[in-house]
Amino acid sequence: MTYMNKPCSRCGESKSGVEFYKKTSAPDGLSSACRACSKAMEKASKKRRAAATPPMAHKVCSGCKVCHPASEFHKNAACPGGLAAYCKPCMVEVCVRLRATRRAATTRNHKSDPVRLAAWRKKYYDAHRATRVENANRWQRENPGLVNAKVGLRRVNKLRATPSWADLEFIELLYVETSDLSRREVRGVFHIDHVVPLKSNRVCGLHTEENLRAIPAKANMSKSNRFWPDMF
Image (cartoon, rainbow, N blue to C red; front, side, top):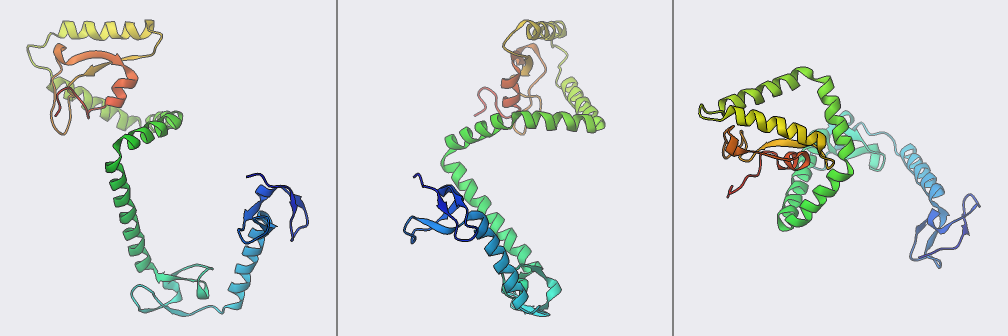
């Protein structure tokens, strides 16, 4: 809906309709004061209420029903006496319960519509890919010791998963050819992927020629160690 310009009842300036809050009871469907003036009036009203209400030395918590000193409550100008309704320990419990309730509701929604969840995750990843890459690179620069530990653990796992009958010459050739493919291919970088991951909660594959393949890097990173053929 398009609104015409109207003057603000407080500052007197003529502003566009989008600069006013909606008010269904008004003839034009807009409040008489603009958004900026409405916020200023609300802020001034809170200050007047806080000044008119004397500070409380003690208050009864709405949760535990115990009278506590004012220091046991968070400040809240919207509440009587400028103190929150719950004491600090009860506020923590309320926040924990609310967080658990929201998490349970989110889990139910995700289970009821996995396709929508997958689409949302892909959209979020694509929108924040540059930020994620930048954060990952910065973390690697700031934590070289942890990076070396991770690389070393990966090397150890690969050695443990390499049986004596594995064709090491073929594996080395596969890595070399994949590196050359990445340099020649215009579609992006390729990785050597273990079809059955070397480390997983369900199964651990072997570092053998039968369990290796060259796939695009993006597909390899999205696969991680959660999927493999005939996993179910």
